[in-house]
Image (cartoon, rainbow, N blue to C red; front, side):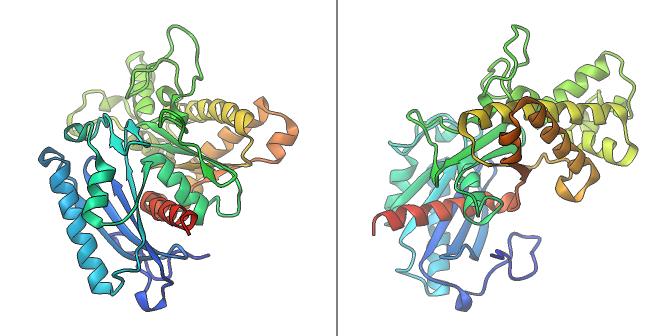
Length: 354
């Protein structure tokens, strides 16, 4: 299936003409610390409307959700789909209580802590709400109409400031008893007492502490402080020339900087170790890498090198038949995976009620 049927707009995804869409429709509402993405998606995964709102976190959840409800009402009336949108998918970051529909303590949304987000949005919109962690939402998007669309099971790792994850087994998301299921970034990869600490919870030796964008910066800074020669040396001072994972990638791509390449290869090694553990527990057949930190992805020699190093590490640590039966690749939906997955999950939940 081709999700995008028209040229991609710089403002968001391409929009499928409503007169060519298939009802019913489902909202995917992806809440982040700085922005809220709203996508209205048809039965076949085509986006028929999209809007991004600023979260304006200091104003609190109530104000943000009222703005969301206003957009939903306006779009449904304008497109003539009132009564044809049976459910809504809602996603957010951070610790949550899925059964009770609560945001517990998302670091990016401090004014939303212990907030009954599902009950509030269900009342505002007057329809059922399917609630997911944002990484699980992205995983379901890739599973529904992305890289994993032909798979029965898959793992998604989202590589960004931290490492998120989503696990689907036989078509079902692993959400967990404590709403902590699929937190792949918090699996242990280094049990030593001096192991690195992860960016959010301070967990020692966890995958996030070695394979996130924050970890790339921390490990690069450590090497530079120790005296490693690199074109990145001038970025230690911070400020406008702050060291970032993107700048490590740029140094590797544009200058073949030895330190940058070493850091990227090490990141791949730790991901290979983590993926081996996850595959040995779940044997999903498909492992997908999403998030902003893909070092150029499949279209770049650095991204291809990154993926090859991950695959090599996995091959060295697993069994031959498991390696032969497992595909590791990059995600295909990019930043749209979250709202698409939420719409797809809302669709899945609505079909269960029929």
